Length: 112
Image (cartoon, rainbow, N blue to C red; front, side, top):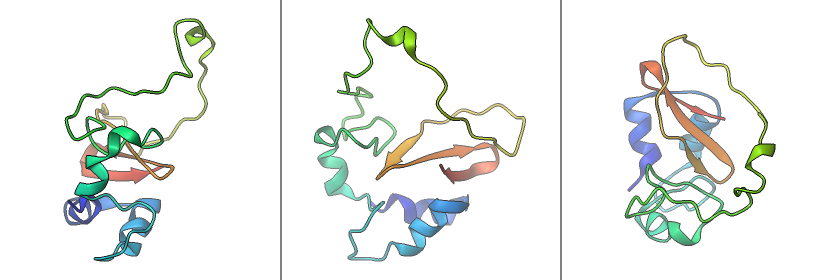
């Protein structure tokens, strides 16, 4: 499953996402590469959120435990991204190798 190749055909890409796709060639396994094998082992990969539901069976569960009931009240805004529209946004971000990808209105994909 070459997710980014499919996105290139259906969305206007900007920034990191475009560079990532340009660097992804058949047979290569560099940063940002997501295929069936990587999604199949996503449950053991705690640093990435490779698909809509995180794992192959889409449980949408994160095994991370740094945030819990005892410290959730200390959460603060760490960063924000300006989008190119005031329309409502609704998307599930995907994190691959340190880059957060999200889609915005007008079917654009951003790498943040």
